[in-house]
Amino acid sequence: MLIARLGSVGTTASFADDVDLALDPEPVTASATAVEGGYLVEVTARSYVRDVALLADRLAPDAVADDALVDLVAGESASILVTTQADGLEDGLTRFPILRTANDLRRRR
Image (cartoon, rainbow, N blue to C red; front, side):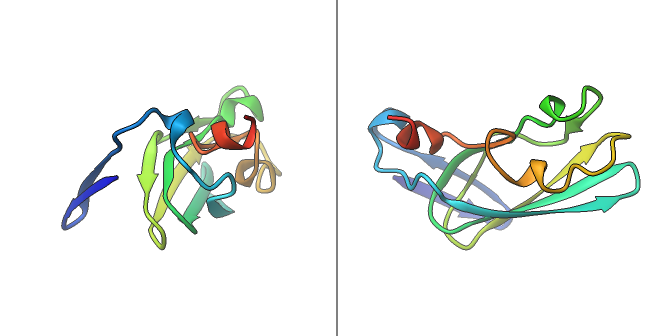
């Protein structure tokens, strides 16, 4: 892995396909809080996590996440805002199959 950071901007690069990396199959913790107009989902990496994505429209057809395919190293966090009119989505937004990562490829192998 090559990880480059300059302030709040960064990138990661691997030298193997995602399915060949020894990625942790349970790399994140997450919490969701209802906010005006939707939910704020906080995702924190326990280990390197590739391509964090929230498939929020699986829970509510009008749900849209403001960010996707986020890479995080251990200890880093990302905040993803989900806009929707639906109520009661807190639990669903924080777990599989709505909260997905490329690390899931190792879990399913």
